[in-house]
Image 1: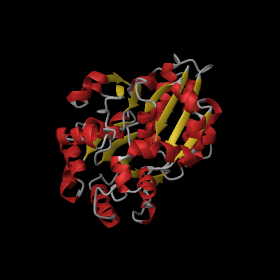
Image 2 (image 1 turned 90 degrees about the vertical axis):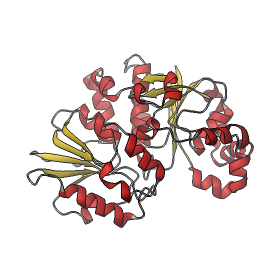
Image 3 (image 1 turned 60 degrees about the horizontal axis):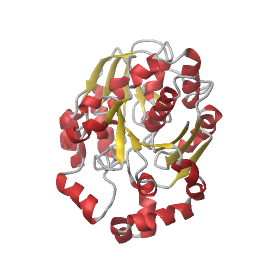
Image 4 (image 1 turned 60 degrees about the vertical axis):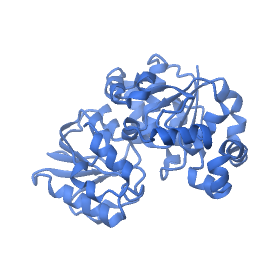
Length: 345
């Protein structure tokens, strides 16, 4: 079996690994031949490449992100001549794309959403039954109006994100029934909890050590509350970092005093929470929180987030609190406000 995966986040990597294992019949003796392309949008994500290549991927390649493409190609070319300009531009910038073209064309292709770098694959390998793996909470909201979809389809001829593009034939989602109605017919389930339950101890260990090798910071015993932060200022969801810190200061103040606060920083954040909050434990950013469920001994009485779907995936958390609606007036991004209003924990 040959597979090509294209993602940009730690969450994408984890879901891709679970899909790869399932697609291999849970046979850890033969995962087939797999290649992974990672868009450089998560700081230091390249540090995971050696561990990923030990067992799961023949090669891991990094490719540049959208803002570089817009700067280099110009807004007009990017908006109206993207297909014509992006393919040769990216193949020159990243020779691995051209070098691996034959392999990709003969493999099953799985994209984690369809942003700029990933649109290369939609253009170059159109008609090849391209599949998509969900992109977290964003996948469960309809981000484009009907008019926007028409413009992308017939005027700019640019890919439609979120699984709406006609080249995306199948969408692997944790909760297929929650997808927007127009794309629900494409859905197949890829649920983290269900997949992890099928893994043997050896495979669980392999996955855990990709992200948290021996010697990584641990979590103390005792009564704990988990806080999953998100890149609010980095993504323009709030005006600046000061607003983000104020939100989390207020959120943490709501946590019962007898619970030790453990903060899991989102991989794309630059905030150093230990500088803002005394007496909290801050976990490393570069791992998906879901992998703590692969080992015994991790447990939290409560879990808090604004709108991260990761909290829904955690059996190691007792009570879960999704508090995004409490801070809607702080969110400057319309899409985020709509996501929070419509999300189901």
